Image (cartoon, rainbow, N blue to C red; front, side):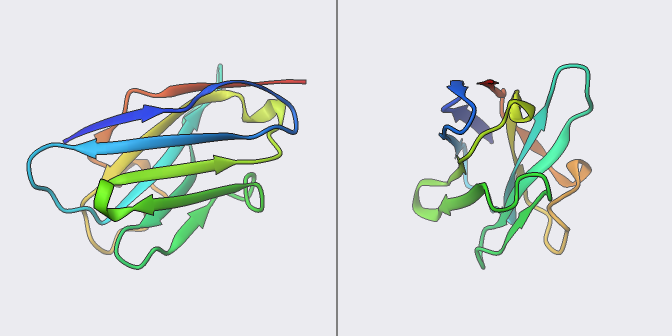
Length: 124
C-alpha cells in the first residue's frame, strides 16, 4: 500500500488549506485513515482520523472546530480541510492508513502505512 499526500503550502494566519492523501496498491481493506503532524523540535502528534465504514471522525482538541476530515471511499482518498489556520499549525503533516478493526485510530502505533508528509507553513 502506498500513500501519496499533497496540498501543503504557505498560508497566512486565518487562511485555509486542504490536504489530500490517496491510497493505492493491491487490494487492501481500510479500517480508518488518519492525519498526524510533527512541528519542528516536537514529537509527532495526532490531528484527525476517520473510520472508513461509518465515517465516524476523531479530532485533537487543538484542531476541533477548525479542521474537518473526510473521505472518498471510491477513490481511497482522505482529506483534511484546515480553516482558520494558526502559526502553531505549522508542521509536516502525515497521512496514515490503519487496517486493524476496533482500534482507536488516535494512536500512531496502530497505523501500518504512512505517507511521505507534506509541509504546512502558517505565517503570522
